[in-house]
Length: 224
Ligand SMILES: *Cc1c(COP(=O)(O)O)cnc(C)c1O
Image (cartoon, rainbow, N blue to C red; front, side, top):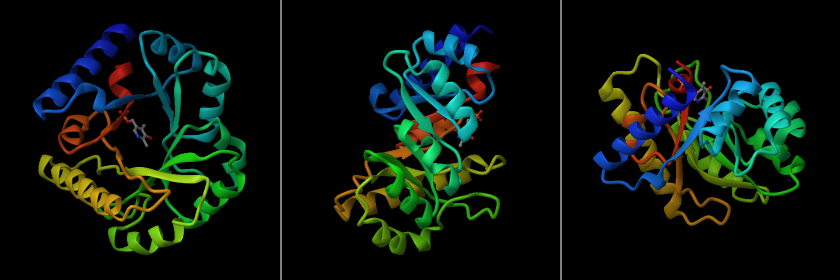
């Protein structure tokens, strides 16, 4: 399959998932996760009509950013775990950071960012030990501590489902995340609009869209 064919297929599958859930297609942004390919291939994919690019590691994010930053209309997403000591190297090139998973990390972003960074609070709904993110019962306390920050804007929640989750578990994880987002939105906290949901990857984006995802992070399906 060519990149252009894969791009058309992914976009039309997202469109189908949207119409099956009675949602507008432009309510879901498709992030192309380019971690499997080099900057040349990522650039070719972008030229098929991609507007959101995502990388999960700082070094690879910076490689892609330096090679491709002059392309028009591109929004840059850092979607993976960020170590505190690396915040200063990368944060000012990031439009959306998807994996805010500690208070200390938020404080470091507050210190290093020279503008407001749109962040997703990562939540670990399934409570898998291997997954990053806050557990549901930690959230209220975390929200209180983050409410004072000026450079960290919590646009929404991000979650990752276990790779071996059943359809029923996926439904449950994504729905719980959306409910939690709604509760936080109702608090009307200034730096926490909580309008967005970052959930869904190549294997589960259809279920995620059904439960309100607004950013799907898709890698494999573009490059198979
Ligand atoms: C790699 C990655 C993705 C994309 O996963 P695919 O299954 O290849 O679509 C999404 N989110 C994160 C955080 C990733 O690291």
